[in-house]
Image (tube, rainbow, N blue to C red; front, side, top):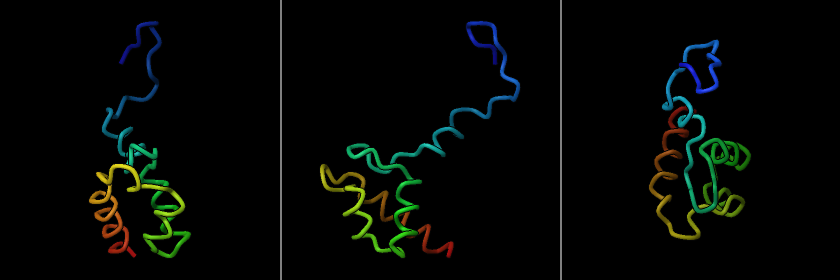
Length: 79
C-alpha cells in the first residue's frame, strides 16, 4: 500500500477487517467496545447487570442488547 504522500507501509496491510475486530463497538450510543465489555465482565465475574450499570450499554436505544448477550455467551463458553 502506498499512501498519497509516497510513504510505504513496512508491513503488509492486513485489511480493515483486522482493525474492526480490535475496535468492535458493542454499543455505539455509549461508545462501549468489545474490549471494554470483556474487561468489565472479567472484573464483575460475568455479572451482566453490573457491567451494564458501570458501562451504561443498552440504556439508550437497546439495539446492542442482542450483541452483548451473544458476546457474553461466547466469553462464558471459552472459560
